[in-house]
Image 1: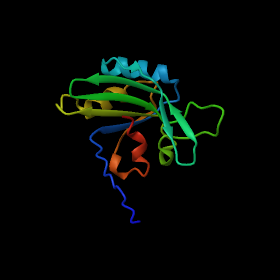
Image 2: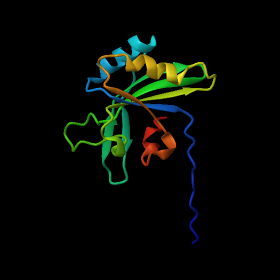
Image 3: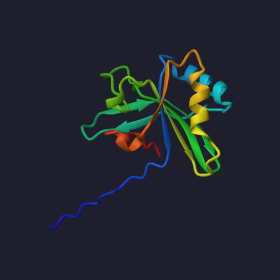
Length: 142
């Protein structure tokens, strides 16, 4: 019997910021809320399952917008009973990622970077190119 493969080409229509900030997830959400004047709210933790039957749980905070969203994801898994796993393993240095999807283009990513860089609790803010990441599919949480 002939097998047919379904090839899916994912579209990554969001901006991505990476943070180096050794903070608890609720504290990081508070810092972002204060710096950007937004209201990130704790969402259900995202569970990512792998082909080897292992999984990882990622803490997430989110704002639903009419034409997009803003989402904070912790890079390190909250599973303490297993080996440390990372959402984006090639960027282990990053503690958090902020995904910004805005079809109305109301949100200015450069203004976000400028405001977040002023925080004493965030050591570094970097704009990342999603298409250059090897593990970019892990960022698809919907």
